[in-house]
Length: 167
Length: 167
DNA sequence: TTAAACTTTCAAAACTTTTTGAAAATAAAA
DNA sequence: TTTTATTTTCAAAAAGTTTTGAAAGTTTAA
Image 1 (spheres, each protein chain N blue to C red):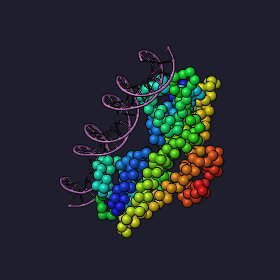
Image 2 (cartoon, each protein chain N blue to C red):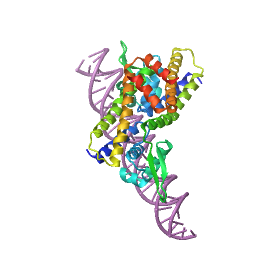
Image 3 (cartoon, rainbow over the protein chains, first blue to last red):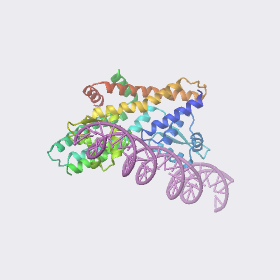
Image 4 (cartoon, rainbow over the protein chains, first blue to last red):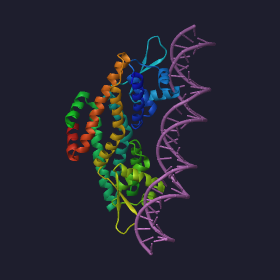
């Protein structure tokens, strides 16, 4: 396997992985392509490399910038915009976690809060409802705390803590 | 808000959450419905409660069983099958993590392994490729270890360790 | 056996998401 | 200015996913 094949393989798989992570295929592939590239790239280079349309490239690039996974750069004397990726996977994961926290954890916690103050009858059904939703809230809030912690803490500290936990 | 409204709200939101977690809406809603129910339920009750077709109920119920999130039960003297959910969110998350590990982490690690033995030229491009993929492998293997650890360890031990880590 | 109760399957329909490409908008150069 | 380069938008098309419902399959009871 040579570099081109290896790059292709990695980009494809990163696309598949992304699509199970709330990041669509094109978006994840663009990110992979930019991560692997030592130089920042233009929209045209991305279109060419991934064989996607201008509209698609533009929209997903902007989504990536929104998520904090890609940055824009202007080169002196050049009119084109250049893009480069966040390459530190720790930062990538932190950004994704932050974004997903906002989209997923915050809404479910809101619902859990709302239902926790509902007037629930004291039947078997009602008791079960209270028990289950309370348990869920307990675990979700723990994870929420973990994400908040991770996004504030230093990479090495956190990784060391994890390593300790694992071994 | 009364019990019916609260249940409805929770089931809807669990459906939305599920669909960002590789569990489709109907599947997540069935799981929510069963979690909230103190008694096991039949396919017909699920269909009626969630207003979905028999085919849909059947397929997703089996997917839930596959994922280890729902169990089947036979009641003496009854011909219908009854279903009940795994209610401990810890076990639910463990199961989901296991399943996703198989579907996501294993394939990307395989690709990373394959490309790591590729013959990569010593150009800027090649060096960047090696560096980025090596970094990614390092972090992913750490998370892989964490999941493996979590799925083997006792719930309370792990939650305590997390709590310690957080505060 | 046969009939009734129940579960499974799967092609087609409905719905959702992603992608395209060309037109509109914007910015820089002539 | 006007022209040219570049980016953005968005309606329509394509692709992907989920749902339906009826027919086929299976199991149990009579």
